[in-house]
Image 1 (cartoon, helix red, strand yellow):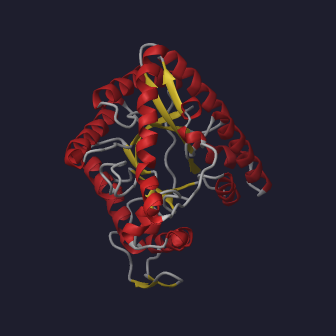
Image 2 (cartoon, helix red, strand yellow):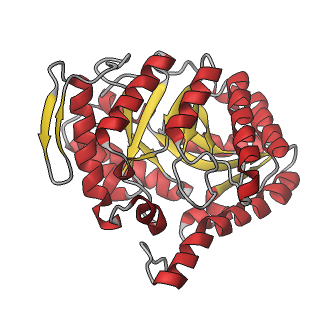
Length: 355
């Protein structure tokens, strides 16, 4: 059965209102605990106000300290911007503070916002190789009882045994992001679940069919394939109102405004520096309301959730507060979703198991 979570992705357009946006995000997290969501997912973006709390590690600690049940996941930590030893320590500490309520979502970092790499003094073209090297360091640091040495392209390290040791054995639960078909199939060949970014329903369905086939071709059995799919998540923008018309009236303008805000600094940097990471000649699915937004009455949204459930995906990461949407409207949508949509898919959540 489908599982539900909330992607806490608060926008702050005015630097003087950052504190308000962060407070509202914490209130939304507490509401998610109250309503029974399984996971709160946190993003990581810098310098543009598109993710008001900026640092998901610090914000995760605040949420975990204020809650008792809900898990906190990273979707994702931009690994290429972090020192791997420090990030491994931080995740291990969160794992202990929460007694295993952390989902360590790892990714290379943004494929769009060059200014995030510039602000950290890291060449954007090194992002993928830094991520791959850092992931290996983190997994070894978590699991080595004798300490470790590492000599790589970006880090030369001599790490005594990592402290604190993880609460979850052999290490905190890890999941990887795969924004492309190639990335998803690479994880399928390794027998690993994944986080999928916003895609059209057709792309989601087709990618999961290919994921299944690739796992089977790699020698994994049907039960292993279904177990990986059950732990995989897809991201959708969601808004629920009493009627389809009311949902569209509120959600569509806020969705469009959110997309405009998310590309504003990227385009300014391109105008000033002539640098752009990914030139898009065709608008991608993530910016098209018809493909990337599920807005409607509880019955309409439940029907769209049923479509996703039929693909075999285990969970939905819902972004409920869209761009400049007032917090109270997002809260109403969250309540309607959990009171009238989620009960149609209610099932016991599977236990997290480390890789």
